[in-house]
Image (cartoon, rainbow, N blue to C red):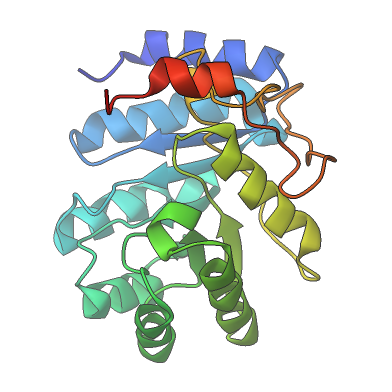
Length: 232
């Protein structure tokens, strides 16, 4: 069940007071509600926050175009995967039809799929995730291709353990070019209060710090690993 506008505003205010300045909204179930949510957030926070929307490929082309045109006055930073992952022609058409930048997420799994997105001009922003895209090396390859094509790069993360979060943070620190800031899933440490490292990575004032220890910067907790094992 989607939250009401009032519930959304209460949650957004709580995150804002904790230092978060990038808000991501899921869209695609009720266009009227989606528009009302965006309007309410923009009216409450003005230009103090960055707003992004994400349909996870749930919208048809016509529905996506209609909604994005209505959202244009509200300074949406990007619209993430508004239509089906395989509809690159539709994504390219949306890029031409709306002033809101289109982000490809699920449409990009390998360097070959990114090359096709670039060739078709199906997005101007790409989101990567280490688990989705096959590890740190392959994510670095995607960033290199995207940078060469003039795309903005959003270093995303699946909700997982602090090991994956640390890997993304280290990649960001090592990357020589620009990267987008934004909503970042810190993993089970934030969602469930559980993790498998001695010092879980959690946001402080809306930010996470790059771990400074050896390797990825985090140390595995043997007791936690034993506690969460399921192959017994």
